Length: 210
Image (cartoon, rainbow, N blue to C red; front, side, top):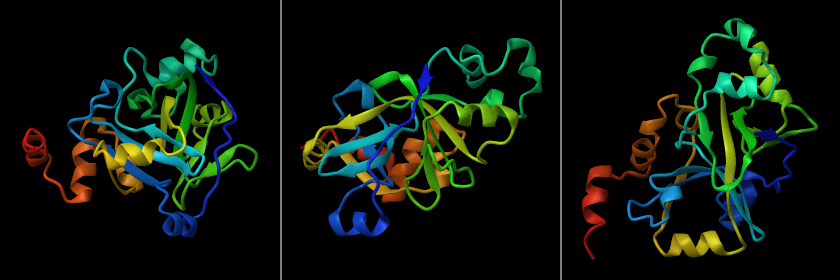
């Protein structure tokens, strides 16, 4: 996996409210989602404009790799140094951020960490950094207070996401850091539905009826 400098179109909260764009929000897949890559997906939207959209799935785990193993693969931490890593890193999940460029890494993180040359603020409390320096800082204990590492991202062509929403493929709601960075990855889908005011069990039952 590689991390790289990511150029995502910037927008302000006022612009999002005026134009109806969803960057800084959560997309939540409907139970009838036909694409298995997005089944029960919760996606944090990093960019949304007339040029398209880009987001990170925050509740799909990457199989067969841990955060510390990834640090070793990237030669950030030698295996013999693993014991010196900050407490808690061993329990951090590596996420499948989406089906596009799955060999590249993206870190969503709290706004207490910022590198002027590489960090993109998404909203007041969440940023995106896609350079390897942030992983080095996390390994040293000087990284952000909250972080989520994902391999790959979800992307939409101009107008594609709007069409999928109109076809009842997605719901959306406001995001909050507590949900984005919740270590209990498997409960994020139901938590997101709860933010919308939907009982997940009722939604599953209702989706089978016309």
